[in-house]
Amino acid sequence: MESVRRLYQRFSSLVHELAKFGSIGAIAFVIDTGLFNVCNVLIGLGPLTSKVVATAISTTFAYLGNRFWTFRHREQSGLGREYFLFFLLNGIALLFGMLTIGFTHYTLGFDDPLSLNIANIVGVGLGTLFRYWSYKKWVFLEATEPIPMELPEAGLRQDR
Image (cartoon, helix red, strand yellow):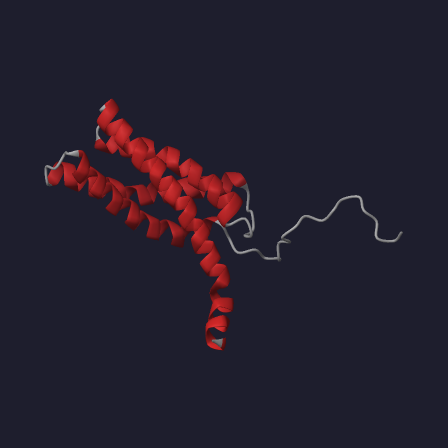
């Protein structure tokens, strides 16, 4: 039992970070898939255009959730820099979705909603692996100093 406790202590921050990342990702996935279907099936934008629109909106949600919840303990290197890198890396991850949807639609000739949704899910899965790795490496950097869990109370003097 002691070895399990030591293992948990060693990896607890990673487990918590992955759980938060997964929660934000699950909500972003629902947003992405819902908008993809609304744009493609109801509005008729086409599968690739629908994917771009859905990804742009779900990525904005994911950035805010990851910055202010998942990776809030990491150093903040400027919202402009982080937002730019976040969208750049999501643009690269979007290619996974575009390739799987494009292959399914244009190469295999499957244009039914089920086939396109399966392709979308595969693309999102591949993109998620890339995103988690790249966010930790380039966007949400390790803190150079410990970041306090609570903000200090301003204006209180200790010498009274």
